[in-house]
Image (cartoon, rainbow, N blue to C red; front, side, top):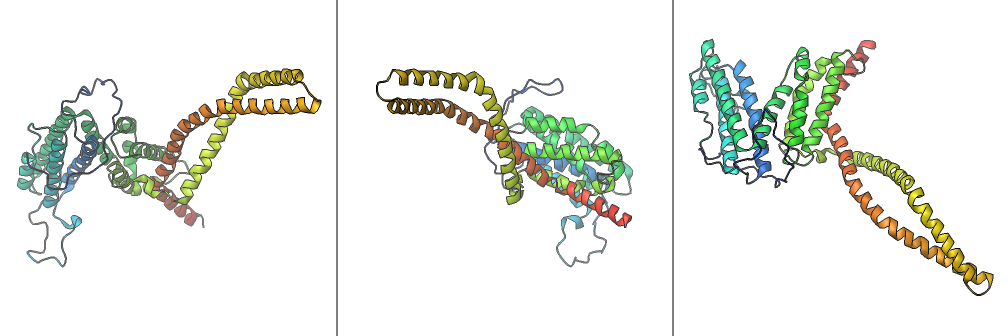
Length: 389
């Protein structure tokens, strides 16, 4: 297999995740090829799925005329950018990217077998002509066959690699630029499957990526359904469709490690996290005190008072001396009770605070990642205000 053309992806070491029972529509979980770096494998597979979906979408509308540049040999004033490439060159670029990603995954997963080949699709791209619909159809069929080969190979190599490939492909199809009337189909039902894949890949994706994207996806699903239902407080479907591609770019950056969602937080977000955490801690403390006050603390204090009273009454000396003995005994007893209760309580509070802090950070990071949704709402609000005025 051809060696990778780009530098191998560097990522944090993968963590061990709990394996769930195999589902009827999925291969078994006993992976034949354990990855040297499972996170790098998963991220590369997600990029590969996204790349493949973009390649197929581009092939449906690509201008395959030879040359691409209609200036008949006149050199461009500057080096051509991605958007200025001919349709054929861009298709070849997509297939080159697929080949590179397959080589990276094979190397990381220690898979020495024969993997999928892009040769058939490359040949169809070279032979296709824009004015021959049969050529375009044959090229699309070759791309779909390559997609099926990649999916079979990925699922057989490592279950999570296959899931990541499917996740990248489905997310790319969800966020592709579209008209408002296509939003219902984009957010109709695939979100349930996307959320399940995100949950299963959470431990091998970059930190915070899965819960943040899942929460942002849920916000978009709620917004789209409300907008299509005619909710006047929600954004216009046209504005949602305009911002969908921008949202997809942010999701891809978070899931592939190019954008850490925590980098989007500022002092105000951390202040909100601290405030919410203090409020939740106070509620937990009140509930804990209520739970241990009567069954634990009250009996201990009563026993302590009785013991101190008996000891003070039996002590010799003046009333002032007996009162001093009682106060010292009461203080020592309360200090002992505090040491007994506070140690485990603080340990439990620390364990509880970690997931609370994580959940609060996820909420704020998801809001930052969902900036295109806020932009769509702002655009709709501005348009309504202009109409009202």
